Image 1 (cartoon, rainbow, N blue to C red):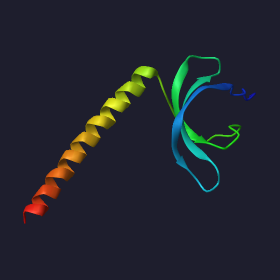
Image 2 (cartoon, helix red, strand yellow):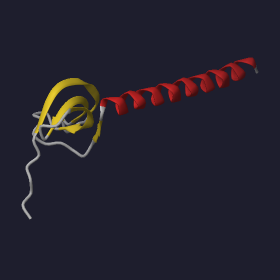
Image 3 (cartoon, one colour):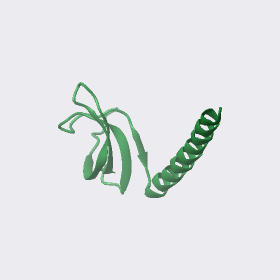
Image 4 (cartoon, helix red, strand yellow):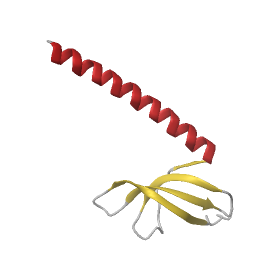
Length: 91
């Protein structure tokens, strides 16, 4: 069976989440895979963007939902940590 080459185009670089000692970076980009629609893509890339790791690709509505879920989670955690800090300071 013939392997099909993966074609991609980074339409927009949104930002870097982490940089590793190897030079690879975990990035958030808008990527068009195999001439399809542009999606939000999170994965590790080598500096020249020729090689990449496995990652996650989300449709725009999925990315918005992810942001909402993470915002809700961090608000809850921050509130819980704030309550714990207040209780510790009261003692």
